[in-house]
Image 1 (cartoon, rainbow, N blue to C red):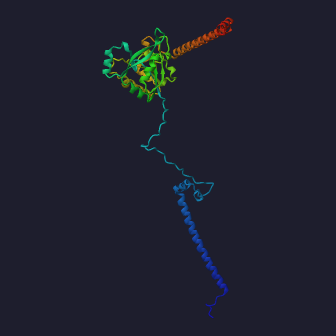
Image 2 (cartoon, rainbow, N blue to C red; image 1 turned 180 degrees about the horizontal axis):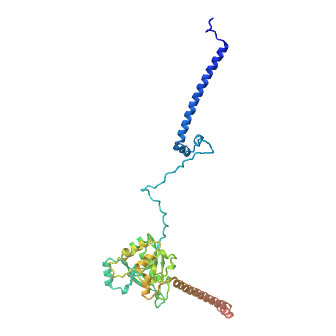
Image 3 (cartoon, helix red, strand yellow; image 1 turned 30 degrees about the vertical axis):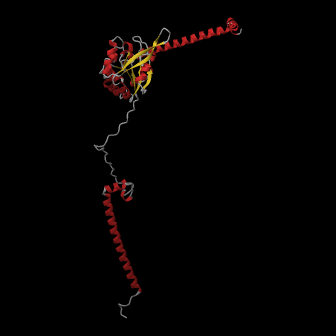
Length: 360
């Protein structure tokens, strides 16, 4: 056989080793290139802060992006949030709603404020005729007088009453936002049937007559509003007589007196009602009324000093003392009557008289 066609075992082993050595070198070359590419990629990622920030912001902690070693960390770029700005056309935050006001209390006088009344026998016929022709509404009524006749019976008076123009509309509209209270210095026997006629819908929450008034150092029949309400910021009194509210001058609304001869009177709906409507929106009515009427100064010009709280307290004490004295007098009279009755029961002579008269 030829020498080229003969392969010994030694030659075959050497050839195998050469092939494996070449393959190993090839793999090392490939791995080296891959490592080089990975290092280039890492250098790119490390040089791009937005990538690291993005991964850190979403909560991913990737160790290859943290730095080469834990002992020498690379500085992190702080993530700065954008400033929040309210658009120019955004609606402002709603303000808290104010506390709702309670209903205004309106105290109304009767005579020459809401009506004008005359004794029918003394009213001139011409006055009534002209008033009716002018459109004033009137009616006749009977009322019990405080006087007594010769037989001791209560007198009955005949009265002609003229209603102030706009009266019923005024009561109806004012009662929608206020509590109406009638306070008159007239006697109940006269005022009660009159008010029953003008207030058929019972719009008055309360009716007060002459016994509810007080006497002060300067005037009688004064209307103390403390018997109606303790909140003087939300109560007013309308009266043609300013001296009726000298105890609370800052709560008074003086009005023009009404009579049957005032055919075109418009005070109730054109003057008083708009003022009351405005006052119903005020937390305290006194500054508004003081600014408009200056009643404390008006009283001072008429010789009545400005009422202060001490004067009101003294007046209430006087009233309380008077009530206590009256109560004690009634108790004393009752005790005296009881003692006399007991004495009569124990009287032997009375018993004998009783036996002689009724038992014989």
